[in-house]
Amino acid sequence: MNNYKIIPCERNRYFYGKLLTVRDFEIEQRYFNDKRRLINRLFVGPGILAGLNVLMVDDKTILVEPGVALDYLGREIVVDKPYINRLSVIDGFDGLTDQSEVYLSLTYGEENREAVHNVSASGQDQTSQSEFNRIAEGYRLSLSGVAPSTTHQLEELIARSQYILMDTSEVTVTLIMPTSASLAEGYRVQLEIQK
Image (tube, rainbow, N blue to C red; front, side, top):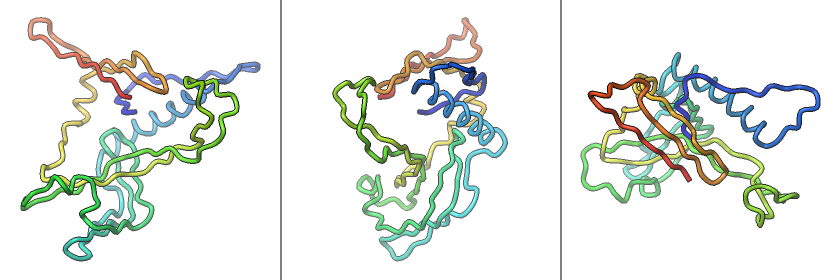
């Protein structure tokens, strides 16, 4: 989930006899991820940290060298081994026409891994007999004839507040609104639903 939150963060308070649920462990992970990503955004900023050179192997094949980058949300994007592939298999290739400039974008991605048997099936989906045990952080490559947007600048992120109205395993509803606004000038409120 995209998390633009600057402050405040919420963390678990532990005590003897506390019953820990899935929600508690998710809050624990979210707290440390949000803190690390906040530091990444404020002190490092988006961009390539190391490696990620792109080389043309031939006129239809590229090589992306291993490396690390940060996106505008402070998430780490790690390419752990050389990526060699034909341009035609990269997302967005089919939409390209005879452009003189083509942009290769690297974005953060997650993938569920390691299906395991769900002993209790007590989550949201009572019929599911298996769940994924791991989330692998990774990346996606895409091609476009349009320059990537840089509208996710830090100033824009600070100037608006986000409130999570609902967060379940199936859907997240977020209210996005300006941190401050003038009634005379009006303002825009956005409701974002992620499934």
